[in-house]
Image (cartoon, rainbow, N blue to C red; front, side, top):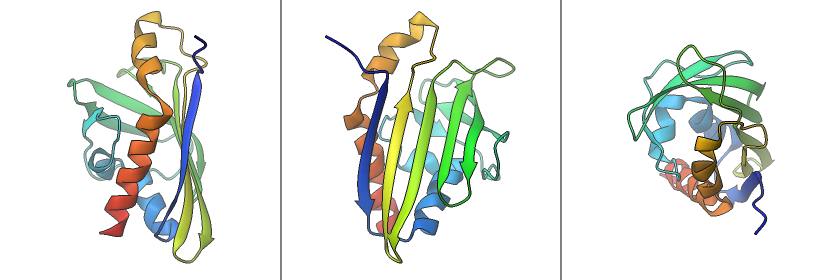
Length: 147
């Protein structure tokens, strides 16, 4: 069986692009819609604004992750690479692309790319991050912005 190292999910969300992007760019809001059930919490005040920003999350397993923003376009694109505190990123990437279709509908694509992951002990968890799990995040995000 061939396992893809890049998986994604796309959906149209009935909400303005600005509202959708604000949920993604504010790490404190991410645990509310994380479909991987991987995030326990993120402190408020860490809203991402640029490439080079680093935001901290706590995983459901209690690990602190320092997420290094490597792609950013306000209202359209954000991507980060997680790392342990003081260490280089592990090599995987989480990306969100937001494309307004009109004033009240937004196409959202969520991608997980573990092509550059070298720590083989992380491969089982990376393989378990499927397009279905990404779709769960997109679906939960849609529910959050609809309320």
